[in-house]
Each structure stands twice: as structure tokens, then as C-alpha cells.
Image (tube, rainbow, N blue to C red):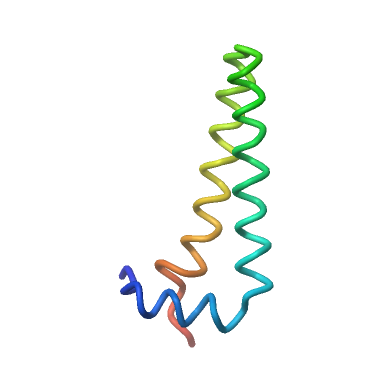
Length: 70
């Protein structure tokens, strides 16, 4: 179940340190992609895409569709 924007905001406001860590992970992965694109390195760009996907998924698991509390 996907959370509504208001619920997502409550989650990340409650733990800004985790939000910033996850955001930094996405930034870092994207910068690898930028550098690969600038170098016209297709193989590195494909690898960077996987890292971006992982960074997105890590955040989505915590804020968009988190595990229900037990």
C-alpha cells in the first residue's frame, strides 16, 4: 500500500537524519551517472543506473510503502 504525501512527510520529518542519508545516497549514485555520461562510458552508466535504482528503492521502502508495524 502506498502512503499519501502527508503520511510520507510525517515519516521523514520524524527522522531527518535517515532522510538525509538516503537523499545523499541518491545524490552520490546520480553523480556517478553524470560522470559516466560525460565520459561517454556506456558500461559505467548502466552500472550507475543500478545504483540509482537501489537508492530509490531504499527510500521508497522506508517512506512510500513501508512494512506494516508488527
